[in-house]
Image (cartoon, rainbow, N blue to C red; front, side, top):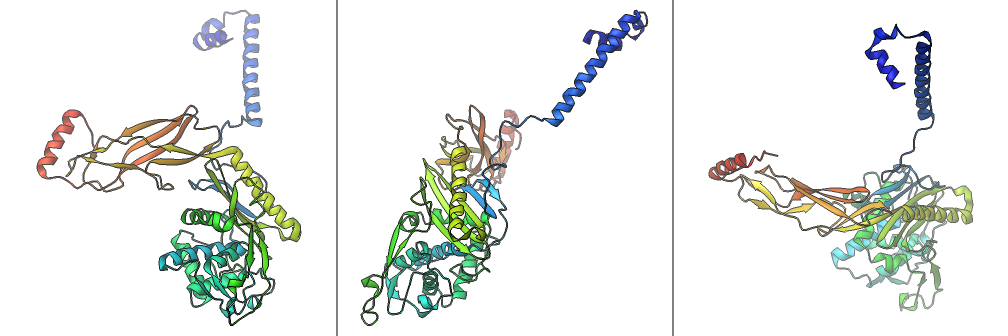
Length: 446
């Protein structure tokens, strides 16, 4: 048939001489060809081929009951799942994580021991908390340490503990809330805001995305808290040593158990916090680590209509579903950087300058962390390209090359290499000489 079509196009005159039957056959073949093409077009429109691969962070993942949720890789910050990530909602008792961060940071900066005991302020007594408060049961005639208060924030989620922590570092609750807001801005949380330290107010506000990023920073800054506070199964307060000699002679001790249902039941789960408030429902910030990969999930607004029994169950089910999905599909790949050659700089006060990989999420200049699909990175290769036409003056952090990691399935990451220091312009003789050398070597200015 293709031969006939070419004959029609290239040799129109001999077509007139063909017999009628030949012409009819050619026309029928041509019609069938057009119909086939049209049919394939329609099928392709109705049933397009599914993409074989999806980029990290693309749509997919479990269906959740929560109003908003985010899951990210703790090492890289890569966001893998979102549902209404920028929807402002009250964090409820997740607020206490920011109170813990302030307390840990300021005690370290001021040289305050976590085990130094002080008298419980009157505002922190359990009887002075709002109705329906979760409590550590701080009371008059008691002394308490910061370490105990931090356990009281995590395990029983005590609002009285939050008040005592706030007043340990600020003259008023409002002043402590101002510190929390200032710290949120410093950490890059643009919309998160607080009016008090316990989370009981619906005027506290955050988003799933911002709070997940905060949890990532919290773990990075205070990694010891996961073992010392968030995975503690049981906490008893008060003890004999918490009673002042001139105060209570005896007091009822309360035994508190960890509220995070996934800690102890989900493999690798080791924090962080739960919360509840009528205005939004049940909240959860949870993290788990397996085989060098740590994920963080923040879930906000599991419906209150589910009730006091099914609500926490559904909240934990959302957390488990997110973590299962993440561990089944992704991992953190750690790659050791090769030895990087120095960048050649022309017409400057020095000929070479060291370069460093641009990996904002990693502190180590030796290893890079990358979020990849689980089947990637079995064997990794690299390609190092250094730019040739770099000319002074050159500021620090100028791009001087590219380091590319790949595996058998393709490229994993492309990392800019940045100059570690500035290079000033050389004297006139250096500039003339390097100009001549660059000309004869055929090197063009980058």
